[in-house]
Image (cartoon, rainbow over all chains, first blue to last red; front, side, top):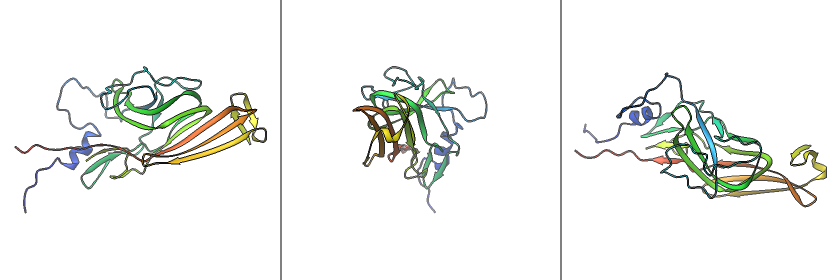
Length: 151
Length: 62
């Protein structure tokens, strides 16, 4: 047997469920899962890895769209496989009955329970919607394609 | 079939339907448009995201 330097896979999974806190100032109100939301951003916006929280600046606007976006359903708890921890929304993210005339090309997933702190940005080809529905269908939730992965 | 449009609900027999799709390494997208008298009155998009966000965890040798 030999010892092997590694970041423990269990730790990666536990990061996704809030077990570890190396800093200060974070108070969790309960053991319940947080609420996450998805907001759409204009193609002219600059949301990226530096984004720290949801902002309405350069968010899409239009008929039927509420600033802040829609709630994301994480019905399946984060999991690990191999050395990768992952989590994926368990349902599609749908913006129904909207008219979004200005091109948008990004969605920000953020934690509305924890001061709207940013989680991830996902970009795609520019789209518009007219009196219709924009649906983001999620990939298979596994270590290779899960929407959010820590490896 | 009734279609929701910018002019209210309309029967699709009155509309010109256009569909399209694109498949890239990032996404697979399908859209449907309905036009009435040369005006876009409905557009819906269904997109399957293929690319996840990925963070690599590393430990430093002590």
